[in-house]
Image (cartoon, rainbow, N blue to C red; front, side):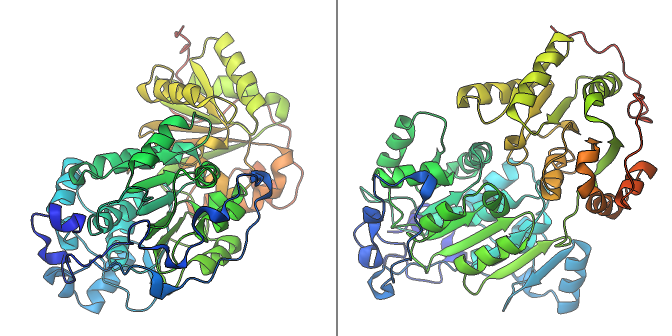
Length: 512
């Protein structure tokens, strides 16, 4: 019996198929025809030297059939003319590629989600689908592979999560020893935890069980979750391979695979682990591949993992920043940075959350220590902190008890704090992609935000591309930065600090 049939109050819109004939990916034994299973994972293998073996040829005839097309177009969507569809996509900056692309949905009622899913959506207070949801939901529900390119904060998590819940509920219940039905790979533990929070919220009405698998914490609780059986696993690649090598789970039942922030996983060197994991999953799965940027490396990986895919791009495929963020760049020398930061904080500090990005863990700790000595309520978060400490720092920051947080790029993606008012790039990042993701921690969910950036002579190679991002977003480019973009040496910079912020908030150091 499928989960969907047992829970849906009105399954007719999704039930154009066999209700009790084994829709799912099969039990641990039923789906084994084409697998090497856990035999691929040697307990003596070294994680640093992941050997990516060629995938074994799958015997598709030996795999249990499962259904993945659950989309029934509503009358209001079906009645849209091609001209109306085109106008809507232009207005919402939606670009699509692929064969038989479904029309976008304008309202939540258009998508036909089951009542138990819609109740959670309405409870969350959403007014209308975001652009990526509008086009991504019908694509995902049709069961085809999907490439989604959209900036952070665009609502992509729900774009793949709600169809995943429908997918899970249409599969047979887990049998003892079964691994998950849905696997979400994410680059950082922060993002993985954030995704699981959404799963818990929107999957509650279906009684879907999930767990989050990531390093830096004891394995015991994660192992127990896996052994009890969970339908959805959200994981970082390294810890998931640990669990597979230790035979704590398997991927035999995964029929819905999500690669979230694929560009970031490549940046972090996870390509071998991603290939090793994906090689263990049946090839007729549904794969959803999400990225904020579309560099050549991401495109090449997508070609290996996806088949006959749709592609939806929100906005331009070119790298660009959120237009709701005001970007201010000042040319400084390395020795001026701390004084500049203090003067900036005196100007903007009003109790709002301020996120300061550094390149190194040592720099994070040193600057945080100095800020606290000078009376500023700052804490730091980076990869050398224990998970317990990172969770505590993040909680203090979210609550506003410590409104200033310094961070390395571990927090640039996956950090979802809704009211970060200011982002400061104390150190300029190593790529323009990371710059866009860093400043994207503010200006989320329709809010406005401001990003301040210290730019030194050592960053001059990024000047031309940075100017392009600023100009595309309608931001002012200072004469000094424009000059660097033309190849001129950086001008000497005084200690005047950022100008024209309109508040002049000083004397803010009243915290203990």
